Image 1: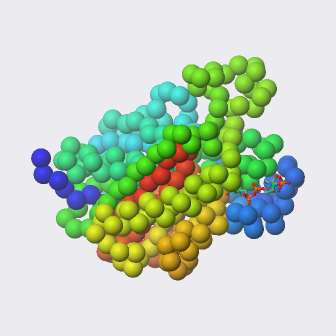
Image 2: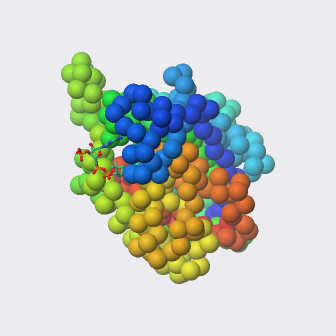
Length: 326
Ligand code: COA
């Protein structure tokens, strides 16, 4: 089997219109704009309406990506949705999205926390590289607002809702030059949603103990994030046969500006090479890297043959990085 080059044929993202600022959060938990901004860099986030689910945001992002690739849903060979907030356990959000789009291809979901999009891109890229498929829709979609504990100030200020979508296809030149994926299940307890699965099915007790919401050890996740951002970035760049200086733009997972700045310092890369939009969206988990890539593209920060490093980390614990030549 010959190996084909794989690249990005189209890209899109969607955020719900409702803006929730740090000042709005001051009214529901004991916090302040000053605390949130200095500790995280976040000013505001987007929150989906109660009747909006992950597939709805994913649909909007996918339409934009399909248009930018000049493709119709009927052209798709596969849909992969990375999410930790699927519409429901089953059917897969990818199948719900397939139906909404009017596509006829197979689809499945992938759960890798905030590294989800990078994991999903690596999976999609294999199908194209080996010649099995030509056009793959990869989505990172989240409605984290539905699993946030709005009484827990240590987590509710961090997250937001969004979807991003990437169309992968075969290319003659450029495309993905490396992927690095990692996991440390031993750290799973640092960031989890304890109940609702087969370990702790929904019960009056799990609900009264608020176990259907995100639980996080922020300090330990912070330390893990700073370490893997550096290690995974260096590994992906090395695997691509490049050096740090060759990278034109860094697209990091948008969790916390202090994590991004620490990574930039450890890598000795100027901070302005790191794209940041977390001030407006917070941490949108699987959607975050794609949303940043899309906005960087719209802002003209990505040109033909730009070399881009994407790097993420999240629940699992997981991490992932890739080098993409545009
Ligand atoms: N407003 C005001 N005070 C808050 C607060 C809030 N929203 N959240 C926590 N605090 C308080 C804490 O209760 C603590 O008070 P104490 O010292 O009296 O106990 C104090 O602020 C400091 O908390 P600490 O946890 O040390 O803050 P921090 O500097 O580590 O920042 C995070 C907290 C969550 C912002 C930071 O740890 C972080 O970003 N971690 C990574 C999280 C992440 O990225 N998760 C997603 C991974 S994909």
